[in-house]
Image 1 (cartoon, rainbow, N blue to C red):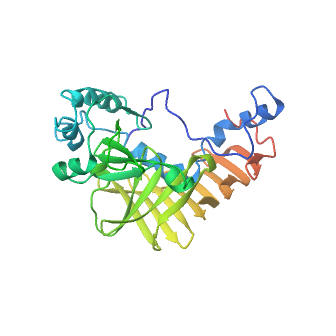
Image 2 (cartoon, rainbow, N blue to C red):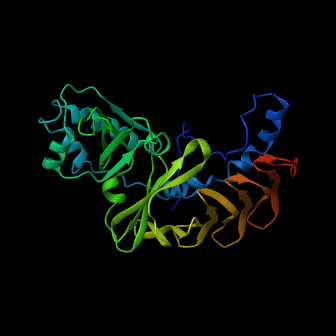
Amino acid sequence: MSTPHFPRSRRLPIIRTKGPSPSPGSAAGNRPARCLGFVRCLLVAGLLASLWWQMAAAKEPAKVDLSKSRGLAVLADKDFFEPDYAKSQKEGLEILLQYGMRDTGSGDQFFDKKPMLTAIIKKHGAPDLIVYGPQKYFEKDKDYVMTHYYDRVGLVTSSKQPDLVVFVKVQFFDFSVSNRQREGKTFDFIGSSNDKVYYDQGREIGRHIYRKDQASWVTDGMIPDGVYLCFHDGKKMVETSIQGDGGQFTTYYPAGAVHWITHFQNGHLEGESKRLSEAGKPLEVSNYSRGLLDGEAVKYDETGAVVARQKFDKGNPVAEGKPGLGK
């Protein structure tokens, strides 16, 4: 699989460091800038496996067939939406697919009817996946949105009015495929939020809910200990081993070689993190404490020579590092 091309507007994951962001040009701002290129290569726990999944999925078929989309069929249903509404949403979806816009979406509330979710489910069946707004997990007393996905089309309701569709959004990922029933212990990504959904024999048992402001996640539900696999095109791409409150992420190259090994504890990256070449040689080795870089982080080239080195103390760079760092 060739290296994917991301649009210039694509947001790159940046590792979380302690404290507020320094202003450009300040003494505090200049020091981290010198190691930014290296730091960007060291992924936050919640984004590590998700980014590799997105890279693996970057090679798309020449043209996605939307003619069988249940979501677009719902939007085309005159019992719930105005005529030609599906056409306008399909045009927006085609743009997202054409440019590979995985981290964004398109949507609106420009429909006059008041579609009721229970009536839609009765006529078109249950949605493929329901995604809840972060307020459900982190702001218990607030209203939160619920997005009911029919493949790439999301029908948005709220916790206060769970049956009334107030907004429609379209996005890149086809949840009818990614959440297909499978045997054994498996998990899937919600690409728009970096959450993970865990299954046992096709039944959802829990989720890891990513918290962007703290670069960590919380567990929703009961996820038993075990090894959970994520597949793409029939190939194992990511493996999550869970034991109590900790575990290990392992990602794989398309050919099957190990790509990245990292550990977590209580919703944070914890301990050694190592990225390997397809030949099994280390390319990056670092250490984390509660999701923050801590200790020495080293980057190697394909021959094993050190090309960048930086020490960290709870997310803060504490040494200048080897010349050339961040270039």
